[in-house]
Length: 478
Ligand SMILES: [Fe+2]
Image (tube, rainbow, N blue to C red; front, side, top):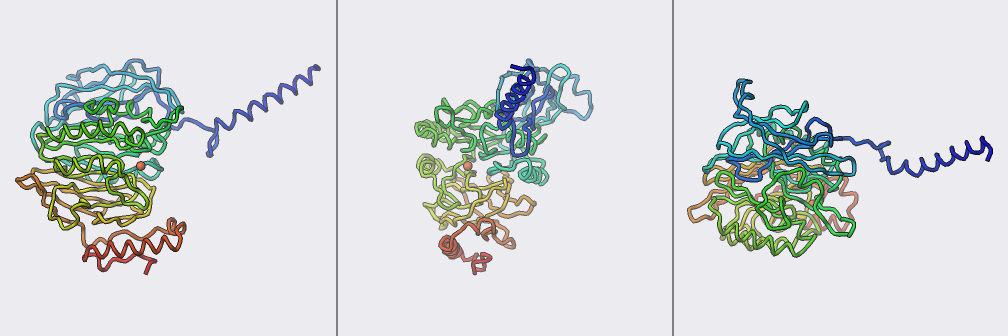
């Protein structure tokens, strides 16, 4: 082959190879780059509990793989910068995780032997690379008032559109004791970029306020064998309790916090493997039977009663609802249906003649929205609205408030615990705030005339169930 031919042959071959490789390195936005690369400096710093919130605190963070050994330092916080002189060092557990975008080290440490009701300062890192000092406060050993934030699905456009929700929530109530995420934190379980967005949105809030998270169906992905499995990032990202059934570690667990038992159940596991139903039922039965706390709040992703059309989770209802009623669970915080519904136990109806069943809430904090279906159980609804909730427990009183992402109170109720363990329900939904139930234009254009008529009918029934709604109108349906 002549030299010039050889040159053109090589050029051609290089072009073919480049054309073959190019698509796998590009996205719609152009050349792919890892938007949230791990660095030697700690990132994705998040507090969660794996043990008693009065005396322990776990922290998890991420670095690049050059950091082979990492530490967490802690000292009682004081206004003087000299608190650092008293810092104790804890060696972190380190694990390698290779994702679609990078290889990283995830580190976790648990501070133990802490004093209850005490503010501590901590930082994480190693060598030259340390985080800032964060502050957190341990729980009381006693039953004492506390407040937390609850978020339904964040899931989509997390950086762009969910960030405003968590930041408004924190701004409304910066004194909260912890955050609760009811699943579908992200959209594609194993996309590191989406987890990066979730951490971008919440930023340093996660480093100051402990997080309780339950997995949603979007934290599950199919493996090469076609089985649905938990996101590879879930367990490296959080350090949650290991007190659940075997095989459901860090997804089914309970935490006792100042007189309330907080329980996470794993509903996507039920759809991945039906065998997990029985294990969760038996476990739930045992921890509700042996519960010294006054209140019980449960979170799981798929709702017992749905808010959206064509969606129902019979398996979840059959597995858990009888136990909620048997043991008088107070509140069930859920997601999945991308709309808002708050209501009572369908079996007992709104007559409230029996009040053993919990209050059910379905909520959404991110921008993805589904149409409402005005199901029978619902007493307050919203469509097309990003929301967050502030929940306060104080002695025999539980106060629930749902806020829109623009910071307006949208729904509220109180539960007053009677001596016999049942609750008196007080509806405090702000009368002056009309329910947001019109069909958003972008969903309406996809609906047939028949579907619009069905929506109208269901709305009329919903209105008829509650006289207070007489004046309600759905725009465009009159
Ligand atoms: Fe979901």
